[in-house]
Image 1 (cartoon, rainbow, N blue to C red):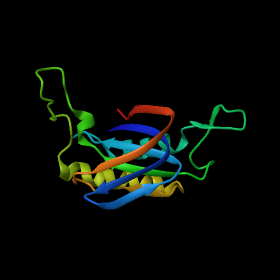
Image 2 (cartoon, one colour):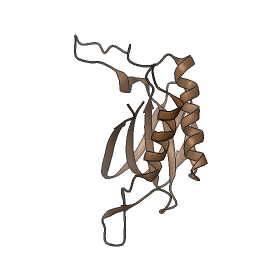
Image 3 (spheres, rainbow, N blue to C red):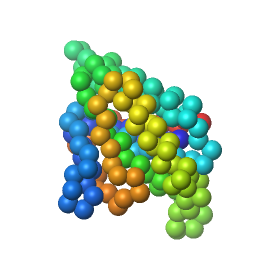
Image 4 (tube, rainbow, N blue to C red):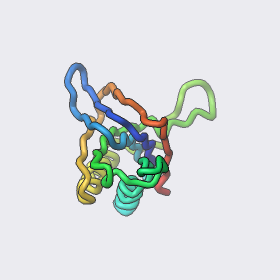
Length: 146
């Protein structure tokens, strides 16, 4: 399981002209699932993301988590995080889980973050989406749960 986590001032996901998920200040998580990922990795990653201390404290240091700032988490499924670009010009996506494996783990991640008391918004699994965000910092982290 792989997550690209961005600290944002705001973010939203659209499918066509419909806003399907939006948050103010918080974290945008682009989530990729590999075929061998497990529910244990989902819980580890949800805990890791929610526990990240990447928001500024009173001294301007990254020392506060998303819960401490009253933020939300917007999660967007993104199989292209497992795109392999080492050969040729067209990425291979054989490292990404098939939808029947990925979707339940994606949903489990959403529920894992919710279980930690964080407001969650989400994209629409498998849809063509447009993601709009205001990256704060910018702060962007890549987390692999392997």
